[in-house]
Picture 1 (cartoon, one colour):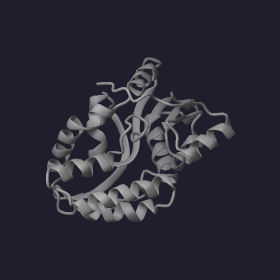
Picture 2: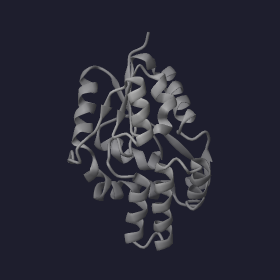
Picture 3: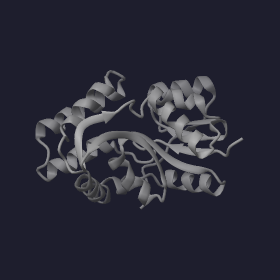
Picture 4: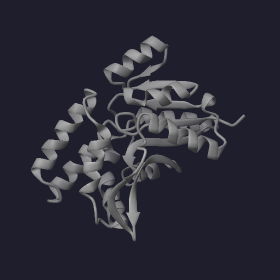
Length: 223
């Protein structure tokens, strides 16, 4: 039997901000995104929270806009964006919980539908080596505008976690998963210790029905 892990979703779980919207706002302030793109992003977040969004189609269109961008330049920009914005919105209680699970000997991983270049700066700040995320196609150092499917979302997130667990000798039944989103229910049901964290209404209801713990963090910054 393998050892356990502690999986943490990113948006609204480790950070109270939506990384995609935060990124677009930041890019807008620097003249790299249009006002229309920002307004569309606000609308998209509303649809997502209401479970009315075809996430895969939206993701495909969003990544298409990055076609031709140099991967190294995008990663560098994301580190600056994280430093200036998202890094200041990490829940102190999330950081404390990561420390607790780490001291218990669990492997800590961030698992997110956000692309890896969004997630890595946070993982580095939290000293988390393992990142499981949606990947984009890169050719000759540049983004092609395509996605590597499946997305790390819904059943896809469960698939990614299972694959990672097998590669790292992790027993999911000995593992924890912290997330805010009802869309993560497949992985919640696969781990031994699911925990609804700052949950949306549908996940809160599922947690009540299943007797899962519910955590609600204060907006107190870890850094």
